[in-house]
Length: 107
Image (cartoon, rainbow, N blue to C red):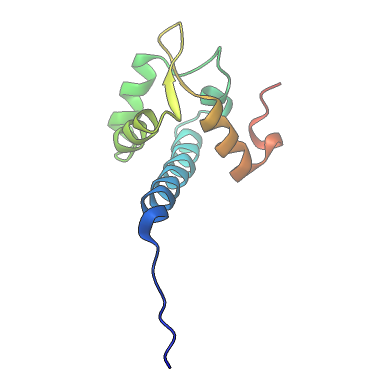
């Protein structure tokens, strides 16, 4: 008798989405650093990136626009009350999980 293995694909989209989200967060951290920003630029809810900073990143870092869209669609990022791009609580949690609280301290 041969054992049958059933692939449960019900979790595959969620895992794939989280992997994509983590990839974008990693890329965002790298692009911020490469262009003179720090992680706190997006991890502090009262800080964020202004529209002119976002435009500069879109121009200078080809992957920024796609990552920004992914973060927004997944609710990992949003615009704060000042109209600045910031990570949501979920986005910050994933960022801190990946890089450690000390790397992007939100104190």
